[in-house]
Picture 1 (tube, rainbow, N blue to C red):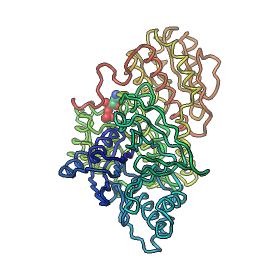
Picture 2 (cartoon, helix red, strand yellow):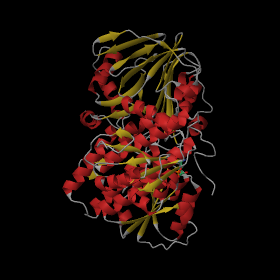
Picture 3 (cartoon, rainbow, N blue to C red):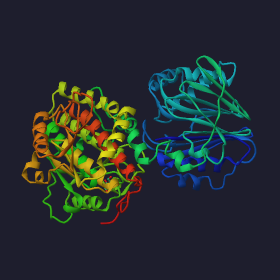
Picture 4 (cartoon, protein in one colour):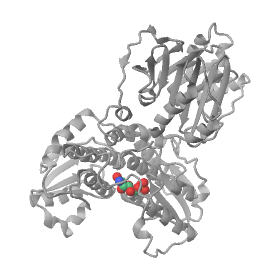
Length: 602
Ligand code: M6R
């Protein structure tokens, strides 16, 4: 996710920008850049990859005296992560940085191109700077040109513009992407979130949607559609870690709440009205492929297992799933008609990486589904699809799992399209369901509060069974893993229909059964399985859109018309349940004992 910083004042500007961008690194990025105007001279630097590369490039540059400065970390959406696509984008005499997506950029670009404006990048952002300079030909002031430009923009933006036409000024505008202004005497800062300005500014103003204006040596003017507005500053928190958590108690909690938003990023440019499209690879990757093998560990294994149902059902393609650490030593029989897929949040998991190397040695084509660009697994694979979850800090994976499941669902539909195994009307149903997913992931206060209250009844007992059928079986495995990772309570995931073949022997009132009971998939079968447990006095917590009279506790989810939409909503419930139980037990859910975020050892 892109990051923005800005500064206007007398201090050395390069370090302020680079330090600020470093604070935003956790959002994830693939290139970075800065632009500074000092004494009427415009300077800019851009680099792909880590901020360290930009630090190296700017090593011999310092900026002294009064000036304006903007900096950006870019997380590619429109156009690949190249230096040309990195921000700031230059017009003839102005620079722009931007977070978000300008939805009508193509329209604006066509108009400007017709007037002879040349574009050099593939980004949506570049239209802002050219639009500004175009307006500035006729506007009375640069601010009027900026205002006219902002009025044309549709979509999401937090944007800063500096220009030689007003060399002491930073112009700003915000809609649907976060941005704040920090104040310290006459010094003014801008940032996407608190952390870059903590320790620098002492007061802050969080911009509202539709607000825009300019900052000029000690003076900040703020406007919205109704004219000039008063800036009501507030004191700034001083704890950096607290600021990065955006007010949530734990990174894991923040990441659960982020899922709705990041899911839209995962789908962006890939889920189209007509079907699924992936820029990342050519469809020839699937030439001669008759089966899929997916290798992964932990949570990533669970998303892969859920996908195996989708690949067979939607793409009509044989799909085997393997735990990477098992696969490595089983002397697997591999044929080059199999596409080898690895799923990994970090892209550095040793077992998954080794499994991938084995498959490559056997001559298989490979595709990785990963959250970290340039990670070892991504580099080792023939092709990669990034999940775009943004940096995940909680050791217990949440948004990475959600976005992996979405990418795999999209991939199953993509292969179904390619192989003509899915009729057009079915494609439309799947697309519609995908587009409903961000809504299903929104955490409502009422739901969180209910789970918080319920959680106090689940702090004892001799264990948990999470049960589900079909894709809800991997979700049950994931729910149980989440709970045991952070609560240290014993929990197992089981296919509900399998309970009667042994595990039901454990059933008693101290055995807590979390039953995933979607209405769109095998509801009656699932109901019978839960009835069998209830008859043996197990304590049942049912999660379902349908009230279930035998349940001891009940969390009602919404009625949906697709199992995957129910899958994602129930996923949030299991994540919050694990979180709330663990918080009550006094555990540090972000750093659970014995676990590491990236498991780079065998
Ligand atoms: O980075 P990866 O997805 O390859 O990691 C695999 C597992 O180590 C990981 O999913 C682990 O199970 C998490 N702690 C789950 O919350």
